Length: 506
Image 1 (cartoon, rainbow, N blue to C red):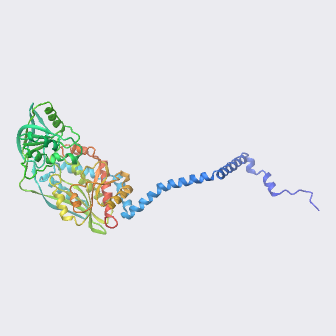
Image 2 (image 1 turned 180 degrees about the vertical axis):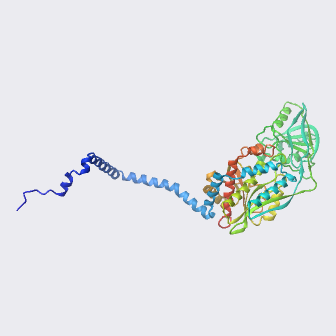
């Protein structure tokens, strides 16, 4: 017999019952319906636009790949070039930038206690003694000096004065290596060696002024180094040189000069840009300019004994292969020698101290060298190369200022330069010192390079370097502690990465 009641299906019950939470929150049902409606719309959009969305996903993955793959490849490549270069480099740079270094403080001490460190002077030898003592206190694995025979040139009293068409004392500096003299003569002005050749018949008995405008150092310095012999060849009695600088505040720049064999020696000095242009303009106004040049300069008959000073951290795996970093300890007599090149030797020294302080043991020996006599003879660099070329794996010099580091000039194989560029891009990017280009190295490590060893020079912002180069203005007020710390970071990182090079250099 059929029941008189109709049985409700479970779905009907569930669809029609009001549950307690629905009674207390009547808007919940509407909210759920909206979500379901929105999801249905999204589902419909995906079904309708799936090709566009697939393409967009592909593009996003491609962009991510373009960004990430080079980073991963670069990390892999650097790890196959130098062991732990990336992690050690990061540690070195972070420490130098965040904790700082003693570079500025040590440089200030050096140039305050020992300014005017010209070869043959007590100041230079006292400075080398101080550096050696401090290196021993630093606790390096080896600290030593090697004797070097160096030239001993003494400036003495000197002056240059315009006598006609009026009396005017000029700022001047005798050039290193010049002989003494007391010459009064008319001046002839030329702007180049070619112009001197043209007017050679007018030169005899006159003082030749080379008023060559600064273009770059390597091009313009020829008038300082060779002007005296060029003038003497045509009978000139003295030579004056427009200071090798693009900028002046009445400051003369000294520097070394050389006499050509077989040509009479005549005294030679540098004058300021302002006085060089003044004399030029007087001549253009048809004025006869007469100058007295007085110099007591002399090169002592007996050479002096100086020293290269060095310290090192021994390598753990290849201790007999040496990565050399350094600068030169000597300076010109008129300068404190902060930029040239106290900063260079201090930055290299501090780079080695930083590596040691972090407890990093390089695979190859890293040695810092303070070369002597770079300014007027380069005997220190020559003597070092004679003793240590064979053990040298790579060398880096700092001798163009320790301002903002930009990278390194390198002389090596193309493959080595490419590999160093990979390392710079990966490790030195935080300080933007990523430029690795083929170019000139330093004077001192240049002897090692000439003997067939690869080498480099720390490149920095030189925009103002030659404003103060070889002048009394080369002093601590031109130095910046933050920039010096960055130079320390760049030098230490590159030295460490090269010391941990996997295999021989190409």
